[in-house]
Image 1 (spheres, rainbow, N blue to C red):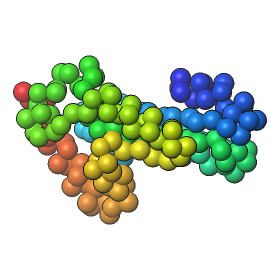
Image 2 (image 1 turned 180 degrees about the vertical axis):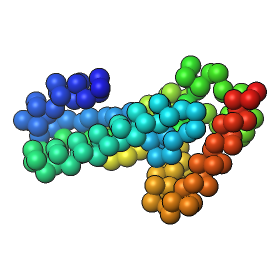
Image 3 (image 1 turned 90 degrees about the vertical axis):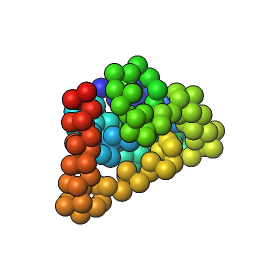
Image 4 (image 1 turned 60 degrees about the horizontal axis):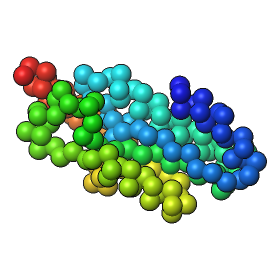
Length: 155
């Protein structure tokens, strides 16, 4: 909600100048929800839907092609949010990004004057394809994630 309110304040002047860049911070969880974290995943999926609609609206409704929109989808970042289950994730082979790594890729996108989606690390981009997979295959992915979540919560 706060992102929407902030965009609402700045977008009119960006459209008028046909210049600006709106960055939405989401997560790889935008594409594949993690069991036990439905609240987090749903807010990130909502951020993705907002970004996609905003991008089309700026271009087609307002005719401001030089107002860029970027959404950033980092995988696990070493922040206090993951502190409680960081050990389990590390033992599962998951490596953590630093906030600086995410910031570097985000700033590079802005300086390149390109809009779009940034997945950090790039190898996590496969997660964006899951929604296009057949439902039975999506269920397998969610079952796998659910089994890992159950193991994590039992420790």
